[in-house]
Length: 382
Ligand code: SAH
Image: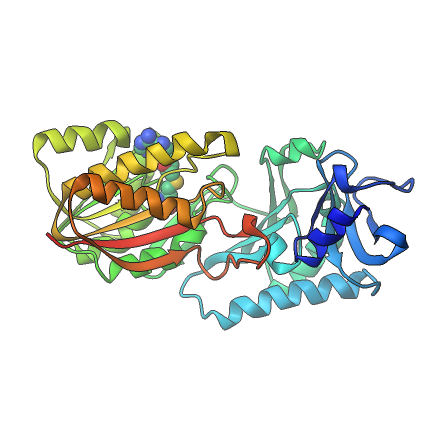
């Protein structure tokens, strides 16, 4: 590989792009290869892909054997870290890819079951090695592969959902804090739930009061966690399925002060503003507006728009919990969009907390892709 590739590895980034790879030995897709830099310097070992723009995903910076014991240790480390977190939930992330030194592997736990995603040729090839280890180390009774993300196509891999161990039911009952969920691991978004927001829901609950508007609610994650602190809760989602799920989840949890409505948040915020509505707490948790770099400008305009409207709808002393999960919009850009919204709304706003994805989705320094979720908690002063 060339010097640019070597610099990236030194900087801690495990991805080496095809344009930096000079020469590839005749190897099969997905195998573990030795990586050499300029003047034949030994740079470590990586997963190889013959299809993706990301040709190499670094595993080690030395030549230790990458065998069963190696994978066991990486998985054990990931699992042990989650134990340190004392997570108050039966659903959480066990392996967060690059940040657990297991590039392109996702493992989520839902009660007695695991849902995994192998997002490269390398992890696809390793799946038969990793699944028995995961079963042994976690005691899972069923493992589902949610290998339907589009990125698999870039690797030349099939998009498919299949059971890899035991049996996996259509619905799994899990708990997050005091809230119970029936999760569909086969069809739910991501692997079933937005696990990365668990800690932000809990943080938001400290401030929530009065009337709550939960925008982009999906299955009511924020609405249900905050409902006990609020008089009344309105949850909005554009999907009718989501609205049905929120309503069912509210009933199952004995939450009586919640109404879920099918609506486009952009239209509904405008409509509420015209009506002169007021809320004491508002949550904005939209889907990724910037799926790629080209979409960043529009995304920023979108963030500014919804945050401006939310700040206008907020009662003095009210809280806005505002999120962005677009990794192409970084913390600074998102903060600027929110600041611009506050300027246009002409209201004084406190920045109460700067948050990110839950600690079970760790960030790896030097790998901005692992830091994708931003969450600000703001207070409107007057
Ligand atoms: N807040 C949720 C996760 C939100 S995911 C949680 O804590 O679990 C984003 C949700 O936004 C999806 O359910 C999607 O259906 C919804 N959505 C996307 N665009 C929307 C729009 N314009 N208006 C309302 N909902 C939208």
